[in-house]
Length: 227
Image (cartoon, rainbow, N blue to C red; front, top):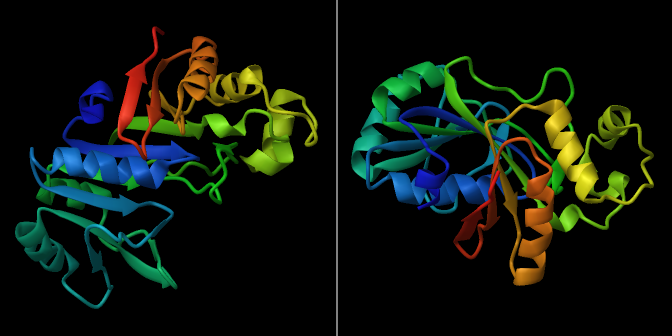
């Protein structure tokens, strides 16, 4: 189980980066709901779940009671405040309060515009003070693309890495960005859907100063690097 490999503990877990955060959230939720009650939520923005029941919080309601009722009924729910179209923003109930009424709170704490890599501005990511772990997701398909095309906040990445927006992303580009920012406890390198991509991901992992999980989240497959 990937939740075991990532050592997901009860309480609040934050997921940041790009290239598969929501997929990881749902995969973890499916695994953890057999162990306890699970809430998926966000400190920024997240799409409404198309898998789990969505609870929309409102300042004019007793949201805690609303959430508890849904949690008791479904066991795993997605909680947030209506934002735009199919998106939710942070719930009106604090993450600390949510963690008191369920076993696991899984938080999408970052936005990446669906790009495989993310560089972070000073106010990012939005990690709750009670979060027990931060998992950074990136995608192996960033390799070979130009920085400006594959990195959200590419200007920040260029500043951190002393590179140009037209430079091609290499193993070192990915690893150095992750190491310099050092915002995580563990890294998931996603979209490793065949042996060639897995091999590339292991090369990136060798250069990262933390535990890495090499994964094809969409296929439900993962491997642990030797870091």
